[in-house]
Length: 208
Image (cartoon, rainbow, N blue to C red):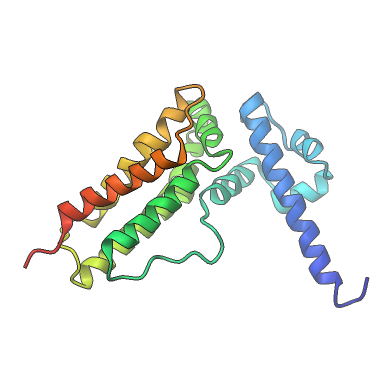
């Protein structure tokens, strides 16, 4: 290995270890509970040393925060849709939201929070402030940009963002927490997004 190759190699190894730690922690939190899962057990399950784990995540809370942040991140390079075509922009956001909600592990993350919330309310705070709210704010900003451009009439961007995301998540995600085998087909997911876009366009279309 040359000197120039070393930084990239070490970075790649570090990223692989971080991914292994996050996956192992999520699995152990779900199987054994947040309280009964130690950092030592996570290190063993991830196949890394305790020193490696502690270097990246000095506390269990920091590790859980990282799990939440990673779970809610959209794909690299994905920016907010361009302003000017509400239907196209919302359709793009809606499809991204479906992909996010159906990502492996997302339902498991919510199950961990719900199960441990009475004893560890900070887990709910992490899920809300580090996961849901940053994503919600990105949708609100897009709607505000459309309003400022004069393409829609909008008095309450927060309410509008809540309505749009809720129409999608109420079908795509929440039944997953209660119904075994809930896995809508791709055409059904696309229909839900299209219906949500149509209702938003009808409700907030610009009126001269």
